[in-house]
Image (cartoon, rainbow, N blue to C red; front, side):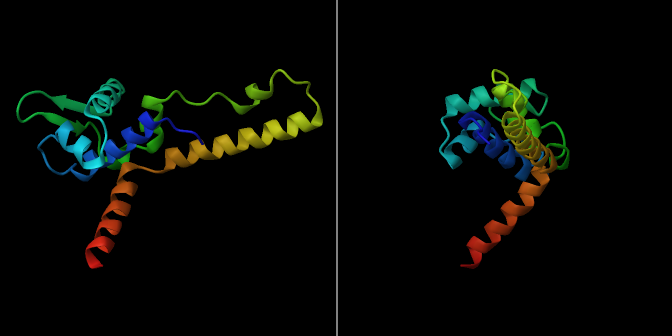
Length: 144
């Protein structure tokens, strides 16, 4: 699976918002950018796309920032990735210029199956799942 850096950064930013979901105060973009080493300008573009997809809402001003529009359990990684990157075309189109030989059909079917599995996995994993994993890893770091 090949995700753009923009989609990967969007997932990280959304996880930060999910971790702060119970806090009614919006999360400042600058905080996310500095915490993870993401360019603030690039993050603005990402958040605008996520807002356009209805995944985040923004508030302006000194106390402004971003909040999730839905609970973390209702937002999948597929929602985030597809808000940033277009869903991949069906795999067989990559082989569409070839003759329909058994070898081409077998490879095409395998590639389509792999792509379908990736998309299903992205759809299965929610921000809530990632928040749980984040908390588990954070606890491990503090125990060391």
